[in-house]
Figure 1 (cartoon, chains in turn green, cyan):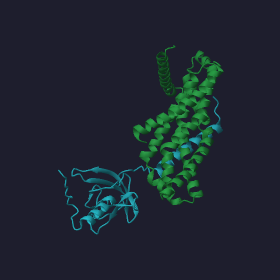
Figure 2 (tube, each protein chain N blue to C red; figure 1 turned 120 degrees about the vertical axis):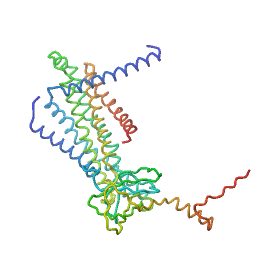
Figure 3 (tube, each protein chain N blue to C red; figure 1 turned 180 degrees about the vertical axis):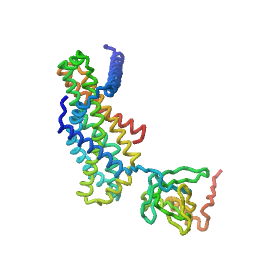
Figure 4 (cartoon, each protein chain N blue to C red; figure 1 turned 135 degrees about the vertical axis):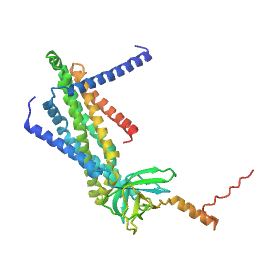
Length: 258
Length: 164
């Protein structure tokens, strides 16, 4: 292993192996999620933990981001005498880019890390081995409801984040800077397109929900059965999740221009 | 796997709030409409669209009556602009369409001028009378050219004298 070329090769193989395992895990989880019995009760419980309990951080952050967008946008647009387009600036940046990405990053920190830590500690306390001994598939029972809840919650949280952001932009742009309330809503409505902007926002948030769901459950599931393994699973969920959300965001924007 | 009624209710509220937010963003902000097409569809040919975009408004006397649904090139290399208008409109066949600008540097939109003909235009018809977009740079160019060349006609190319 002293040869740097060999160690690079070894490292590359490990990355590819991890990606492959994660893909196999994702396919197995998707198959387990649609196979009866459908775990509706645990899906609702996870939706509560991931979705409802993330509402406060999503709404407060959305409001703050919208308010700062409104202020920054106003100060920039005033230089060009275009402050009547403030609604379009705030709305398009929130819907196309900031809403899906920031909501995903917040959900990773708030809920993705918790999912990974929960499953990781189940691994460490040999609960998943216990399930296997009872011939219950832990992927279907433990991982699938959490990933499905993540996939469901992400677009809903993103939409609420955008609404709070639009309200925040209105508060700072119209309330604090005394912009024109009519032109804020008018430029918002005139420039946001359902097919071009809203569908793109929805595609992004669903893709991020699936990605975060798979990363969080896989990192927990594949963690080492030690307390160190639990902390490593939590950390790597946040790191891998955030970086891959930002990379995927670039790929979706580049490929489909949304 | 206990089912708590209160938690189920809160989750239901959360899902409804999220769906309502999506619906508001799509319908009110994004302008999504179920009927989509099926209104009064007209087309018009222009020599110059000058940066007219899809979904640009179509107005009559400043009142929005529809939007641009398609911009393409026809076989004569003229721009063909399709419009989707309010189906309740009863426009005469000699209606004219012009591409105008909101302000000096604002967005392009289409203004319709209803004529005085008795017959009403039908969906799928072509508006015969059109006025193309005015390109400010060309206008200034013509003006400058006109001043420097006095009486010279604007279409005549400037003679190029290249020293050999």
